[in-house]
Image 1 (cartoon, rainbow, N blue to C red):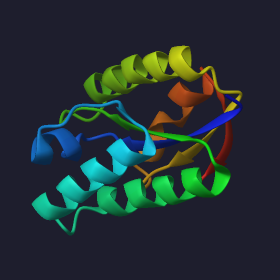
Image 2 (cartoon, rainbow, N blue to C red; image 1 turned 90 degrees about the horizontal axis):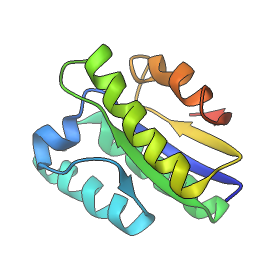
Image 3 (cartoon, rainbow, N blue to C red; image 1 turned 120 degrees about the vertical axis):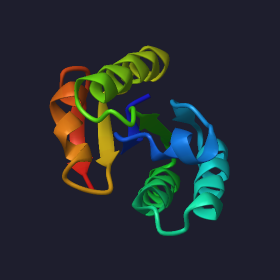
Image 4 (cartoon, helix red, strand yellow; image 1 turned 180 degrees about the vertical axis):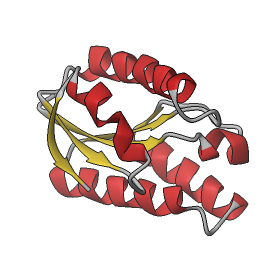
Length: 123
């Protein structure tokens, strides 16, 4: 696959609020999880990030994946994101990724992603 869209929830609001673990793979599954998160907490900014990633994936006719970290943001969450990212890269072998986040904190994982795939764009 030439490119995939990756959404990141570094502090793992998704699991804490819905019980769903990452990686969340595919447009339909991401829509389902985004809806669950929106119902659990309509003001969570990860909802917008997920729907934005889904929209981009549909426009580019490519895959979308949401990676989740841990409530303990830092080393622990980044190790979990790394583990999920390795799984996704092994599965899809993307030449590049479009990264979608809900803010500067999630962008801290850019070096982790760049160590495994080229980042084409960040939104």
